[in-house]
Length: 64
Image (cartoon, rainbow, N blue to C red; front, side, top):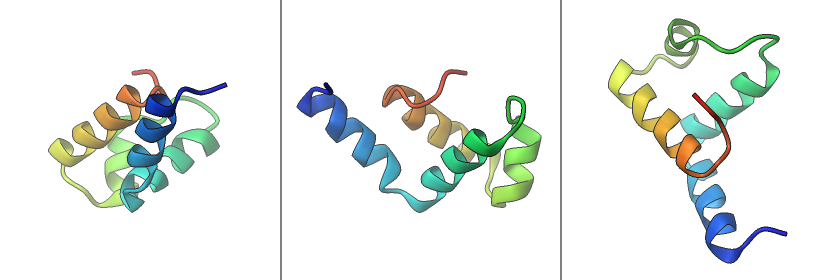
């Protein structure tokens, strides 16, 4: 069972459409999704990708 804080962190992380799309791509990848692949697929800057990964990691949804 997830705590209210954990549930809130997950929902906040997934509320951003690009972050949700990034998580979907990570989940569908047959191997770890590389930064170059993510950048090309999402058309975002490296700084934005880093921010999104950090938010997903903070929510406990990915490990980098």
